[in-house]
Length: 302
Image (cartoon, rainbow, N blue to C red):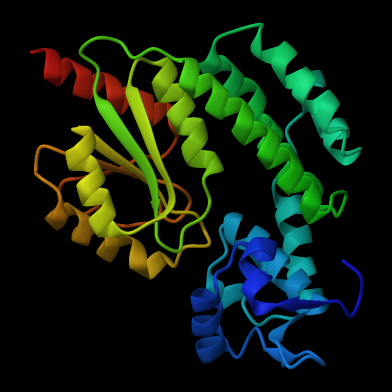
């Protein structure tokens, strides 16, 4: 992004994944990010502010709390990013991951699709997600923190991965007697890649999966569960979703849904919930979601 470029507030979520409501709360509490006015009298943010928000996003994903990073200078945020990189030595990347990252750096979408298709053909969908997609996403995060990639690289790669996984999920065949799982992200939560990866693995494991997508109002989730006769509501709360709102949201949903419907919650800001509401299962990783699926299947078969 060129210095001095103005980003309208209506586009800020697309640029950073932080919604205007979240930024407004930060502005009230931390005095950041500041709104500016363009010559055309539109409200928005400078490119320097957007760069800070992108650094904050990475640091939140790395385990920092908003109070530790929101409002800090670019220099301080960069120092924190380097500290994370220094504290956690990068794991050796496979040849496949290195090749995929290089294709992303080159913006070679055609090559990326072909390489992913070739890799997918060598094993199961679960192996593809765990051994190819997950390492690729982690490697791209690390490359971004080293400023080897731009944000548009991430958008390009995410789009390719999402289309690939959607196609795989649509072609999967549920096993008889396995649960129906409704996947969704609540309002103000737009991160879907992690949830999509989990859906792909659970579909490969035999579940009947249905996705309502992001920004789902809670009452719509209640109606969706009833209409689909779902056994489980699977949700994801990324680091962009306010941590303090995760537990109240889960409590609200638990009260809306029949007791027979299980609620599974994953994502960076779900796993930091110290005490899960009664009737809600916090899912730490994809493997745990598979274990939860098999447990529920055994209960249904009895």
